[in-house]
Image 1 (tube, helix red, strand yellow):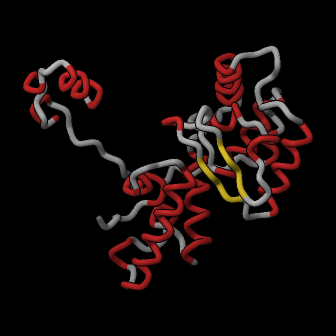
Image 2 (spheres, one colour; image 1 turned 180 degrees about the vertical axis):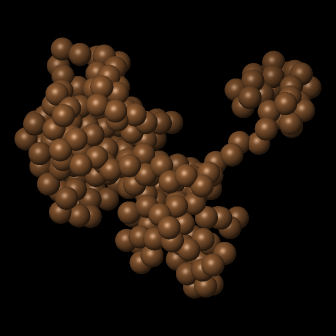
Length: 217
């Protein structure tokens, strides 16, 4: 609808499309459900992935909470800046480069593995295009029952939230925002802003999908 409204504005036909989606029978988008979609892939499961590029992409996705496209196009020689990753705009949703901190020994170990594996290349084999490797990624995951690996980003967000605040997020069984003290609410909002930037979201309310709770505006 946003694209259609942009078109209507450009051709001088604003009145063609109602401003309220309800008039078109489109309900308000629901961001938050009670279900916790966080996922973690253990080492035994990862070794069932026969394509080594896909296996490395999943390790990266789990450790840094990257999107599928980002963890496939990833070039360690470019992205690894020592204390943070710098993601190219051509890898990210919306074309905006993004910084993700390197904070743990696990993250460094994962990057070292990827450096050794990919060298100056990416996590796309030289004989394949991005689309071909994305199809391989999807097929390899589905073959062993790893569907909707976006859940790895949920797990990353919840782990970061607990590290930043000292308590679990509502989706992980922690207190909801209304149960926090005023001081905790300030820390909650601070953590959500950080996580929103790390995940590449412009709007902090989207982080509710990963963490649960209610964001103040």
